Length: 463
Ligand code: NAD
Ligand code: UDX
Image 1: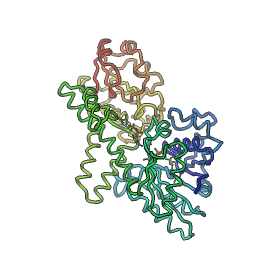
Image 2: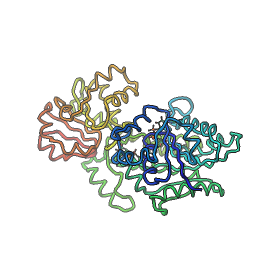
Image 3: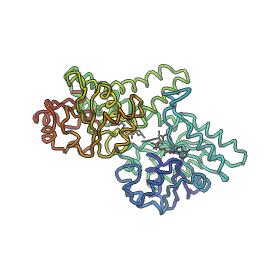
Image 4: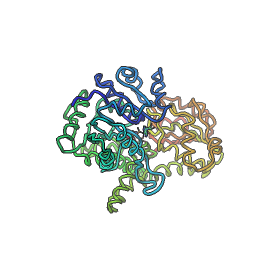
């Protein structure tokens, strides 16, 4: 089967960039990305591609090239489903906030809605691809919905998890370490797998396209995220020990990373990992393990989250302690709010939790982030429901210039590793601050010696 028409349900951080790259690399395939969120689709269709809703380096250029040629963004979900041979489901799967599994399990209501909508609309056989990250064995539930339409339409369900990281989505999509496709081992399943392999083979070498059974593919995604997050919690655990012992976590990370069995990547100690995936996916893994009665497995992975929460809280505690045990009415400036550099995404960003802790201590927080809007920062805080919207808005001042944000501050905290922060005139910033001028580098991106020679009292992570 040759694929010529693809639909993707969900125009978010995954659906948008992934489909833009498929469209760019496969000019003969028509790709339509649909979403219920009208504003999001309107933004994707903004004539100025700099205004598309997701900031990723290189993405605007790809959208400019493919949009209107073979890449379309639309709210006409049913029409797009009807026309496509392959339907990617790329909707959000957040942690449940209600009912059984609240705070742990993945909320699959959006996935189920998609499956029901596909079942209702489809008149011809289709391949349904799970692009969202899902609990192992979700394909079974999707299949059960699709197989009970009574209209004779045949569906093949594939699992094709996405491994892109935000901030590097475009390069990750163009040069993936691997593409993973899981499907049924029946002849029909194998035919569907091979059709999807052919799509990716337009730009990814075939030896990097891995095919497995559906369950291995679903579980590999959760496993990959758990292993990655575990490395960060492991190095962050060591950072606390470094602070007590005079070791330097950057030196320790370098020393262990040169062991080829450990490798150098993902060993950067920080204020704690954020992002929409790690915490959600590990909580989901813990929930799945518990649901099979595997309590030791569940406890083992839960520790990764416990350590990460500790690391965030430790950072805010350190600020309070260092500022003579009170930050009440003191101005603390955050440089960065996004969960990592080169993205405007703030989901689960450590900055939100550190701000919340410090506002509890009656600090006044000023923030500068090159890509995050004022409304986003305020809604992130409001979402925690710690205090009223008005109280949050009084406690948080947002600036579009870093030097303005730092004026009159008692302390600066670096929450995101934006490259521009390293190029600032730190002497000028020092001169604008109250003395003693404290600096808490939650990303270890600044040069401690240089800052100390200016006069800052510098605190990094793990040294
Ligand atoms: P997102 O919230 O940015 O986007 C999801 C979109 O789906 C939203 O725009 C929403 O309006 C839309 N949607 C929900 N239900 C719908 C429906 N029934 N019909 C049409 N549209 C609907 O989410 P995301 O970050 O793109 O994540 C999507 C999935 O991909 C999640 O399962 C996530 O775990 C996984 N994932 C995310 C990343 C990442 O870096 N963000 C990486 C790999 C995998
Ligand atoms: C992650 C996975 O990397 C990706 O494969 C998956 O598809 C989605 O989840 P993402 O969350 O977008 O991607 O970014 P990532 O680069 O993994 O960073 C996650 C968090 O960990 C960020 O807050 C980052 O600052 C932090 N981090 C990362 C560290 O604190 N130290 C590190 O060494 C690496």
